[in-house]
Length: 583
Image 1 (cartoon, rainbow, N blue to C red):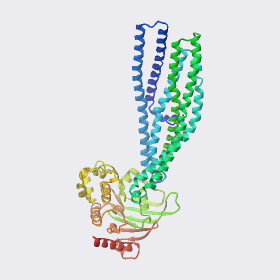
Image 2: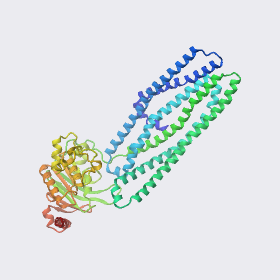
Image 3: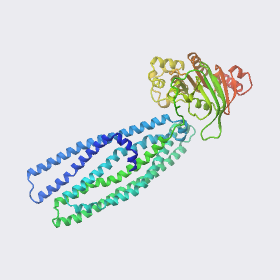
Image 4: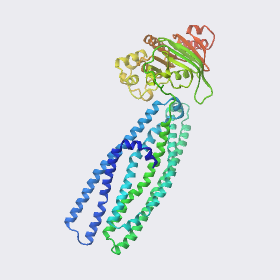
């Protein structure tokens, strides 16, 4: 029952609703003991030839009113108890999503998306069941059980009642033993569910690669392995859970046997009437629900407890990116001063960055180039505050970025990665996702600067065209330009283009960069590129090699000295000329 204590914070918040729900459960239980008593009286009246038409009408009227009352009271307890459990589901989902949004990159390296989805869906549903069906089962089984036993003792015979309830302690004992085993079984089943979630996500996201490499059969086999593990874990959990019902049926059968034997003896000896015996057997029928409910309750509790523990482990995770004690709330503005002496990724002994120093004046463009894996993205990750544990400082306007309030600093940056996430909505809503109140004119201006406006007008519904999941209806270049437009609509203090022009042709690239330079004459722009033509107009270009600055200067100075930049630029120019000749 520890899960009820863990959820006590919620039960206190919804105390009024749960008390009203339990109150209506009590009323239902009270009404529930009336029909067996009436049925017994009817049988005695028939057997003793004392049943009149007036009494029959009275009894039938009472039964009708009891049925109507039960219907109404059941409606009310469902509204209060299940309505409250829906609020718990909402609260838990909101907490998780808010927590996910606040976590750093280390968190997402530790947990896979499939795991997080399982926590946010399956686990929360299991916890919600505790606050809904669990509370109902717990309260109703106790209320119904006690009220029925009291009715059996007062309306029939206390000795017969004691004989009928003797098996109940056995049920409680066996339930406790099985409950501990079921807890671990359901925990394993939930873990396997997360695993198959991960596999499903990877297969769907990588379906193009799987088909291109002809690995459909191998991927299906791997998926089958995960499915078998899930089935095996659920079979064990369901097997243990299924032991409750036969056990309960056996105990109920014992109660019926004892009742018939002893009750028949009491009828023969005129200790009770036949009508009372029938009422008693009816009461035992009512007791079947509380007995079965015990097994069902342990099922719900153990599953909910395992799920709640998994969710709490997630919520206990803390981001290493924290606010300063008294953060700066004014918007960042001014020159960028980047001085990193040393940086290593968490849990890594390899040097990520070393002696990276550069300055960018407002209105200037910095180009960052180098081989894949040289450390270009790492420079940006520190700038975007994805990691704060480094030796050195990064300042904007003479203020360390770690001293800014996160909600002030991050919105001042327009970041466009190479592979941007697009949402399953319209082109219009995707562009103004960063600024939800942006006007149509602002959206069109941002699209024009990103050289996307004309392309959008050619789409079936223009700006109202649905882009599909992950922008499937758009080309790679259109996706990148849409992401650039989304960043530009913010008119950010610092614009970061992280190889986000790789899918557009040279002509389009020139158009975009020219317009961006004109628009952002007084703001900072950082361009990370694999194609060096993207950084030709930069006031300074740094070449990163093994986490260090290997070369630096303008485009003109760098092509005049031997090194990686000069060799790469000549090779790319030659490739471009060859492509032009082929066309």
